[in-house]
Amino acid sequence: AAYDEAATPPVVTKFVDGIKQDDWTANQGLDNPRRAMQPTAILFGDGDQDERRDMYVNSIQVRSTKMTDAEMIALGGPSAAGIPVGQAPAKVTAPSLVISLSAGSLVITWPAGIEGYTLESSVSLAPADWTPVQGVVNNSVTVTPTGASQFLRLRK
Image (cartoon, rainbow, N blue to C red; front, side):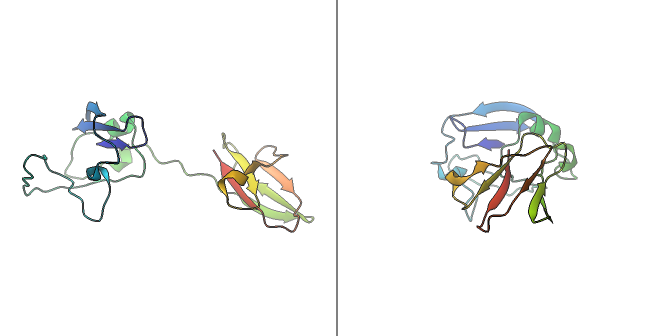
């Protein structure tokens, strides 16, 4: 099951043996305590009269984001070896900034070929204070320090 609680309406996409079954949108919101990752969680149950049965589970995978239908299908059906994580697309890691000093200025670079990122700066970490850094050319910019604190980030 792949949950997207931020969707409108919230949706649970259900798969059985790697085959998509349905998108459920009725009563799937976060207001239902069954949807929350609480200290104690019932992961399997049919919900009728609260009956429970012993069962054995090889693997469970919890992610911070909803997997796409293609990612879910790529996982395939059940296997005694557990979840085939090698088949699911790898997570993309954000690039890192490299900052060096040159003739009293800061040279800020990040790996070439990284597209869709904007270098931003702010004097505080408040969400509304970030602005694009001017003068960026080919994933590099040279800035002169002003003495005041400054935060930098790459934003996609």
